[in-house]
Length: 175
Image 1: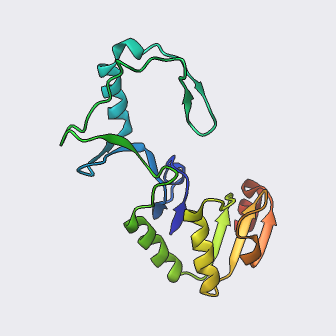
Image 2 (image 1 turned 180 degrees about the vertical axis):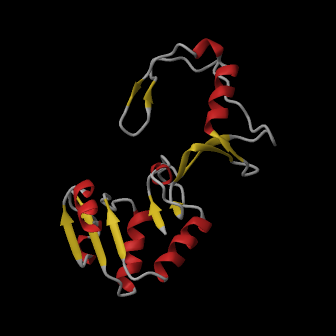
């Protein structure tokens, strides 16, 4: 099982099947009332239909996917409601301050409990939702290997810490 904090579906596109998207997926929209999930592409179409005057808006994008629209007036902006129940929609991701949904956490915790160790690739583990799995592995006496370019929150727990580019280390280790 692969546990990822990414929200971009990258691991699935790379061919991984058993993936737990700990923080959800940006390509999905969730209703906060009825929990219905729909593809993000459909939401984009609905946003365009509800706000045709915004189609030419240009925004500067930040590395985290945010867009800078500070100078825009949003008084007339229409946010579509859930087509199933009329509830409020949001990207199906865990925002800072929100909890990881319990079923995701439980699936990942069960996989860790049945594993021989924990391999952390490319994460600083600064966010607790990921770091707690290093804590759990350490408490269970499982070895922890880190492959990152910099320090991590779990450095003191690690059996092995490689400060390296994972795109070079992992292919060499596999073959």
